Length: 186
Length: 83
Image 1 (spheres, rainbow over the protein chains, first blue to last red):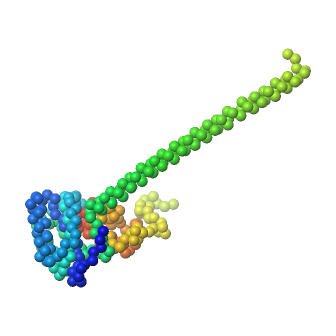
Image 2: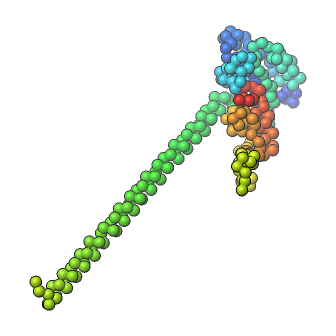
Image 3: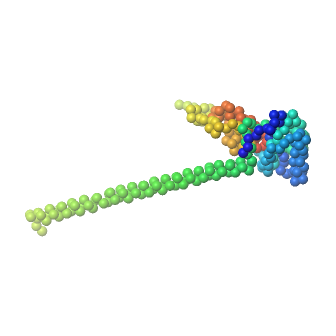
C-alpha cells in the first residue's frame, strides 16, 4: 500500500506488464528476465517494485500458446528512454505481449497475491451469504411449520374441548331437570 | 395488444433509471485498474463485449476509464475479445 511519487521532476514512474509463454525452459526464462532488467539498467531506471504473477491461462491463444506468465515491473526512469525499451521488447522473440502504462494519480501498488486473497475473501463472503440465506429460509420454514402446527393443535383443542363441556353441562341440566321433575315416572 | 414477436419485447429490460447508480462512484474509485479482473468482469457480457452504460448505470467518467481498462486487459490476454 504505497502511492507512487517520483523522486525528481525529470523522472516518471512507469508500469511494465510483461507476458511470456509458460512453456519456456527455465534457462530461457532466466535469460529473458535478465535481458529485460538489463534494458532497464541501461536506461538508468530505478526499480520501485516488482510483482510476479506466475502462470495463468490466457483468454485467447497468442502465438499458439494458451498459457502465459506475467511479471509486472514498476520502474522510475527518464521518459525519453522508454521508446528504446519498447522497441527492444517488441523485437524480443520470447515476449508475447508487453504494455507500458503510466499509473494514474493516487495509484496504489497491490501485490497480485494480496489481491487474490481479497477476491477469495469476497467470494467466500458471497458463498457465506448464500449459506446464510439458506439457513434463514430453513429457519423461516421451521418457524412457519411450528406456527402451523401450533395453530392446528389450538384449533383441535378449541373444537374438541368445548364440545364435551357443553354436552356435560347440558347432560347435568337435563338430569337435574329429570330428577327434579315430579311427574316423571319410570 | 402488443405483437408477440415485436423487437421491443425481446429487448433487454432496463432497471428504473431513477434508481440506477454508478457503482464506481459509490466506491469513490479514482481509477480502474486493468489488472483487476474481478472488477471488470461484470461489465463484459458473455460474448466479451463491453456492457452499455444504459444497462449498467455507470457514469460517463467511469465508463471511459472502464473502456480503457478492459481494452488493456484484452490486449494482455486477461479478457477475451470475442467468445
